[in-house]
Length: 496
Image (cartoon, rainbow, N blue to C red):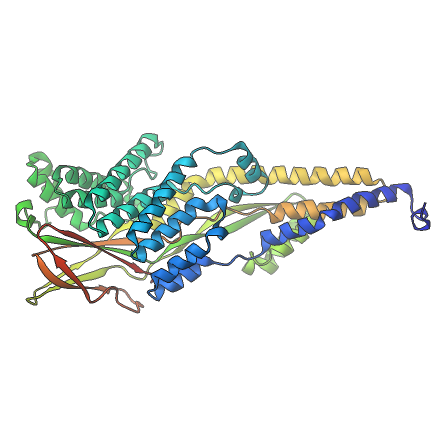
């Protein structure tokens, strides 16, 4: 036997053997810890900078170049982000193609493998494929419908309108909580516009009525009142279909609404402005550090006092401290951070060749932030239960590994072997705890809508933004040539 080894008892030699085996994997463990704690490049900040500069093609290039960074677990998210940036870049055809693949991914993700669930349970929900929220699924079809409408392909847009109707009907059938998201006022309103543009007044009326009912039913949490223009649409289409009872009811509900009969608008052209305003909410980690001993409680209180201002940057320090202590369980939950738009409305102005000016003001059609808040609120109890169970299992496994290593090491080496093993296993348990912060962040905070009916002809269209602190106007100088009965969709993106 080596003279060096003769100086130590056999239990210490056994302990060194155990630790040697552990250190073979320490590089991997350190890499995992650093990967879990290190900051990631925020591609969305770069996208927003490009959009704020009016360079939607650059924003799309950023998403395209980051495809591999999204990873196989976020294929749906990549498709949704890319579909949106392509639309903003004016590549409507490619946008629809990408979103079609995203829609297929939604259907594929209805089933999960046991292996994926197990991996997520031992690490975090980022190991699962991102399935998206129901409102995001509906928005896929909304964006596609707008793509087709912007190209003048009304029949293809109506296909998306029917898909929206089917998706919302399925959500309604499955809804247990009638105060949750199962209807969508804006999506229904858009389908009504598309049906009416195609001359299908009957389906337009049905869609307008469902839109009105959805806005009313969900205004408590959606923070979106019924657009005034929708009142006009209901009166006009009910009158055109000779629905006397419905018409009289809407007259009673909207006594001050001015409207034109359908025949008077039949030969007019229509311009619809869709304005994506502000930035969708983002998600952050909210860490709950649960001490299971008095000294652990003191450590948590002391650590929070030092590092509360930059929790993400101190995750590596937390992992070491809590790993050494060994009596702290970390739970990560998602927290929504809203990024409200500064623009309450827009003014769409159309100036004809004769100098005649038509001006309309936009209204809020959809509050994406409110939808995201409601979705997370409804899912948070389930997320919390799962996170607590996951943290308990990871702690139990780390505790079992630590005690097993101590027993294998023997009495003399047990204390420091336990320290090393506990640092690795419990530190990694803390470091790997992370909430699923994925969401469709290329969506806006709000979607505004304005509709203007004008005589056929050529018009100079411009959009002015309202609100304090707003730096620049929207679209300006665009020339539109409008035919009788034609509907033109204008889409703009406002980051402010």
